[in-house]
Image (cartoon, rainbow, N blue to C red; front, top):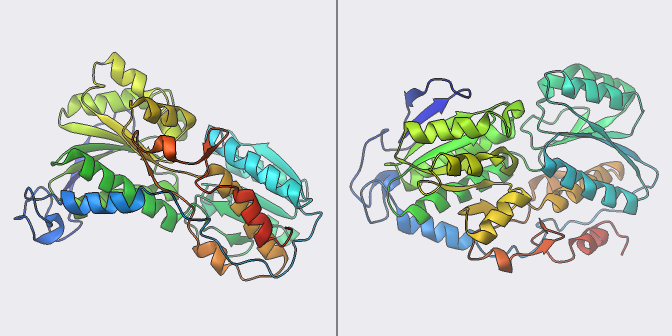
Amino acid sequence: MRVAHKTRAWAAVVTIAVTLGTVGCGEEEPAGSGSGGGGGEAGIDVAGAQAFVDEHSAAPEGLGLTAPLSEKPPTGKYLITLETPQPVSEQKNDAIAEAAELLGWKYERIQMGTDAEAAPNAFAAALERNPDIIHYSGTPAAAVQQQLEAAEAQGVVAISDSNTDEVQPPLISTSLDSTQQVEAWGEMSAATVVATSGEPTSVALVTIDAYPSLVAYSDKFVETMDKFCSACEVEVVNQQISDLGKTTPGSVVSAVQRNPDIGWVIFSFGDLALGVPAALRAAGLQEQVKVGGETPSETNLEALRSGDEAFWTAFPTSVLGWRVVDMAARHFVGDDLTPANEALLPTQILTPDNIDDALFEEGIYVGVEDYQSEFKKLWLIE
């Protein structure tokens, strides 16, 4: 399989030959052998991809987290979130506020910008308020190392979701919506592309490699594409957070115009698609490509319902917010965090065919009915 990397909007494409499996890039093997095995056309395993999709399209059976706390969480804790500017972050943090209120905790948010100093500045501002715990998303520990050291000296702990950093004080968890979770979404996304296409195709994978968790998604997507379709190609279109809704639509249109074989545009999170469908329509390319990815926005979900987009892996934003509070509660009662670190979020592959049957709450996918009561049971307050 061939992977091309486009490092910035409007930058030149650099084609890099890589081997991700037993089949060399651009090469084909007879059906039934190597990573393209499983029957059908050489270099593609549609049946294998479809079996994977079928398995992961059903509604989740539960939270995935079953270990209760050893005692009720203490009241009076003070939690601050460093809120990134994506709408999905606001949804998640609304859920954190609800869960924190239930436990009798004080909760505040500090808004982050998009400049290079946004994370350290917000973290420093949070430390000035003397919280018990600081929560942030996506930012690598290296970008806030000085602030983390200050937090440890101050006796403040931290939780980071959507990250791949190792856990070391003051961080108590980096597992939520992290490597194992986003890799699962990468597998689900790639399998859906292959199963839906039914033949070798080319993909523009739009992402932001400044976020390690998005790199994990992209890497797993590419790896799984090679597993099911060694004859397929992926072009990585890297963006910056400041590109959202601005230069990203033009970058995607440029990639598709440059390569007429591109049949899919895949996004590593839904907000990254802002303005792209309209740009594709304006360029007359909406019939050429299908759109999908992980962690859809409300706009993406509406596009699924109308049939304008092909699939998204379901992201239970509110459940993730409650999981942040759950992790903090386990820490404060001195429990082992392993069960919470290892449990994945409830999820499924959403398509126009099954989205009306999926479980939503106020327009947000939750997957699990009355998940709040499930957390109350885990916290021994119901």
